[in-house]
Length: 131
Image (tube, helix red, strand yellow):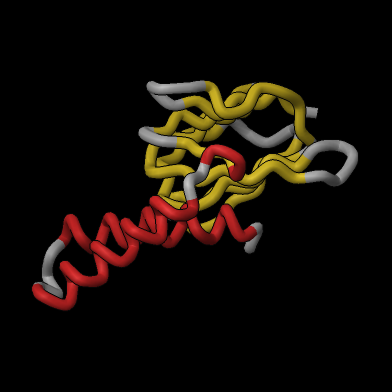
C-alpha cells in the first residue's frame, strides 16, 4: 500500500492509501506506480490521475500539469490544478470547451485556446467517468 496525496495550491484533492496510482507524464506516457516502485520524479501532462484503492475502487482526478514523486511508500501528485469528479462543474467545462473551439476556428494557431480546449475536454472526460 502507498500513502497518496493529490495536492494543488488551492486544495488537497486526496489523502489516503492506494494499491496503485496511474498518471500520464509529458515524456513517458502512462505510468503505474505500485508498492516497491523505484524512486521517481516526473512532469505530469494535462490528463487524469487514477488512485486505485485496495478494494478495487478508483478515484479519478483531472490534473493540469505538475509533478509526480514516488519515494518509499509515498506517491505525491503536485499539480497546478487537481479536480475530483465531484468538484468539476460540467456546465462550466462545456462552456469553456465551446469558447475554446470558437477561438480555434478563428485562429487555429491560438496556443491558449488549444490549452483551454484540452483542459475542458479533460474535465468533461473525468466527469463522465471515462478512462
